Image (cartoon, rainbow, N blue to C red; front, side, top):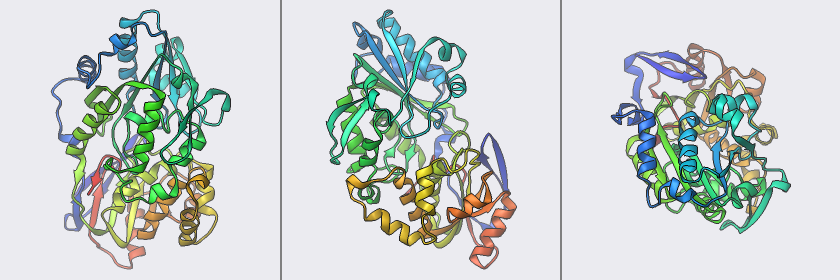
Length: 423
């Protein structure tokens, strides 16, 4: 059997004996044919908004319009979405003063080159684009207290806009249930302290804070509250296939349109587990596999189907290194993962440290299985994060056999670990 696995901007081929393969877990998104092109799907969504007036109608009389856009770590097809949104806004109000606000959350700032790649030269040069900075107190304004108890502060360009709109995409999210919708505000354009309160150890440990889960999810509850208080009025969200092409689009009310998109996705990406001792997975390739921090997402799909004491073979190019200084510090503070986890779980909601949630989930995965990490990252960095570095698939499979102490163990393959909900 030959299975292609996304790695950066290319694909690596896993060649493995048929008899060893217990299952290949894919979302049915790859089989879904919308019947029309990407631009038409977006047009139809904007013409038929869910529980909302059309965007052009909402824009009438609104002077200051802010459109929240995703940052460089997300594969949102902004070259399609943003022109459609800007056109609709200007159809309703040609005089609107539009600001595109880049939702970096707690990520590094998006560069000018990345903005050009994301939007194209025309929008990057012509439009007023501001990159959110979660640590710049001068651009943040308070909205009140989150259900989690933390103070909610967001970018003033969002909170003070006459009309707040966002673009985004919906995929399974490893603790928020699904991406998209309300996430454009929190964590997208929120203060670091607000993100920390929302991502506390208690909430991350909640069994309802998992991929595909919104009902009762405390993290989701905070995010909806923040988006409501910020005045998020209209969203345009899409579902993508492995080629990052739009196969479904929803627009309208930030709660109801998002829920409609989540229902569609949930029907396409659920997969039954195929428990084995070796699971091979990826983070879906570029841009989601640029660092180790982001790769934790794909690991959680493997976590749901690997046997205790098994091995996860994770493919993530990681050309940007670890992806988070705080994340790296959390995981290198001790050689004992159990001790590291105990320290995180002992922290209260108000004591959350930057990136501890990613470290907490990573440690949860490590508690269940060893991780063989195929990447372009430095070997010493990978080892310091309690993983086994390799640089080819053949080396990865040999290392997995070595860690298990036997050859030929059954294998489950998840070609895109961020697109599947393993139930």
